[in-house]
Image 1 (cartoon, rainbow, N blue to C red):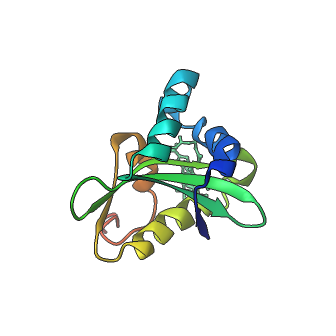
Image 2: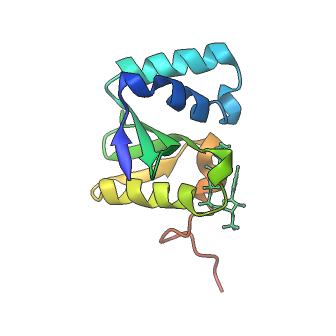
Length: 121
Ligand SMILES: CC(C)(COP(=O)(O)OP(=O)(O)OC[C@H]1O[C@@H](n2cnc3c(N)ncnc32)[C@H](O)[C@@H]1OP(=O)(O)O)[C@@H](O)C(=O)NCCC(=O)NCCS
């Protein structure tokens, strides 16, 4: 399940976000964390099972649209459906909005077995 980011999650959130290809640079990662902490149109969600193992960063600045701009899972827990479960949970959390990926997230989003993502027969 998702929990909302709080300041005491900063280390784990940064560790998870650092797996995003666009956040390999530490300066960029720090700026991005500050943005999530200060910009009300950005939201960081942490995926918690026994422990926190994933993060999703959302941009809510466009009316009616939820942009997934970051998504990352702890490498020890990958390929077990966690990433897909996170995308599904975001869609369920915002039933009235259109959930879209940014270019950085599009490749994985395309694999998420979502309505409209089916390959034509
Ligand atoms: C992308 C990521 C979040 C997927 O999490 P996960 O829990 O391993 O994903 P799931 O187990 O739910 O889904 C696995 C599927 O995602 C695919 N996948 C994994 N990483 C991917 C990537 N970077 N781009 C596209 N597809 C990816 C797998 O090939 C697999 O496909 P299949 O269902 O056709 O076999 C995880 O690999 C990660 O944290 N990567 C580093 C951060 C990153 O690059 N994020 C942006 C990805 S575009």
